[in-house]
Image (tube, rainbow, N blue to C red; front, side, top):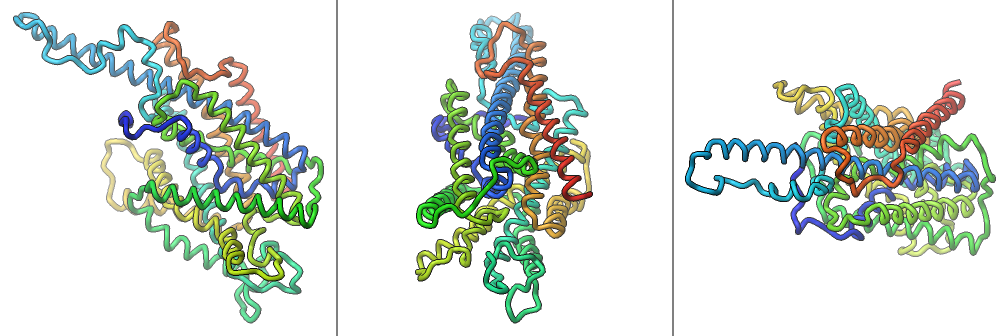
Amino acid sequence: MHAPSPNIEDQYSTLTGLVYVFNLIVGTGALTLPAVFDRAGWALGLSLICILAFISFVTVTFVIEAMASANAIVQWKRFQQMKRALQANETQDEDSDEDTPLFSPVGWEKFPSQPHRYYIIHEKIEMGQMASLFFNRSGRTLFFICFVIYLYGDLSIYSAAVAKSLCDVACTYEPGGNFSNSSLPYTVHCWENSELTRRDAYRIFLGAFIMLLGPFVFFNVQKTKYLQMLTTLMRWIAFTIMIAYAVHKLIVDGVKGHPPVADVSGIPGLFGACVYSFMCHHSLPALVSPIADKSKLSRFLAMDYVLIAAFYLLLAMTGAFAFQHLDDLYTLDFGPREMDFADTGIVMRGVEYFLALFPVFTLSTSFPIIAITLRNNLKSLFLTEGRRYRWCIRKVLFPLLAVIPPVLVALATENLEILVGITGSYAGAGIQYLIPAFLVVYARKRTLEVIGMGVKNDFASPFSGKGWVVFVVIWAITCIVLVSVNFVQNYIL
């Protein structure tokens, strides 16, 4: 089944669609960039962010081409069905005195004279549906495994980020008073006259977070338009304040951070964070399909990526040079005790707490949606379509499988740099690099077999040569190998 065509009133302008893409990409993942940028070095970080932005854009054009190809296959199949139905109808009525058939399928007259209309992005065909159209059974299984692992990583990052933010705001004990609260070890007491450690508080907040939001995975919850508007507004207020404060700190206090020019050991962390921060591929069908005018889609998406890369560089550069120490979650560097004002007013105090609790506000609204998406993909991976299963398996087991593993991961480590690095470097690299590359290859092969070479795909990627696909695959494999070697050396050996 494919999503129905968007109604005219549900469509929006190209500019609105690109704003949605911009908001989707520039999310919480950007908050992990300043710390890994600082460790990799300013010159190496600048170069790598630009390279990763470009390669991410290349694979976005692969997904767009695959979406058009999937629409072409669906349109062709629909045309064949209408053709057979019309022929059968004409056969039944061949002795009838009426000159017109009993019915004329909508759109029938358009296809023979306008074959280019096959390649239109009119219906929302998700990546999972494209995988079903173009991949064999093994390919579909690998796709869903990669997608599920990425969603597990997402939920682990969300859980850890929320619990960590709440812990760093709530725990007020600072031995000696010479530390930033976010840099204290988790063995330190949470409050001065309490035996509760920061790790205990982290786990308590994590448990409370799961108890409050975990039950939503047992139901169907949809994000409302107004909730999206609210979270988007809060996100941009937070990012604007962070950049403005870092610039103000540089002007008033001068350079406090001294990142190296280049440190190769920081590449794996930066790679994972960038892959995670440039991710939009899995949501492109929902964002692109309703755009009314798609004639210059690739050009506007390129502009989007240039703006996003510039924004990331501004966020990372100002943070790396303005702060002597950077936490793995950038908002924690703006906590109430980190901003050392002589006389902090109520407005500024509110801003401090708003920034420190920013991940809590935004991630709490997204957690149920991601968890439900994971639950549904687990069902698609393990359950056979058309077969009946017990109620407890469908309604209890799979929701628990969606929530419990991420919580266990967040309990095991609160290190967001590791979680983002692993999620981005492995499952994220698969979704952002490997899956789009293989999708476009098999989409081209399939449409060539079904539709032929005579019909042009107006949404074909500008990077149409086979060399680009080979380059993306080699790049992804090389990066995954390098990240794996670094991870083994730093965290296992």
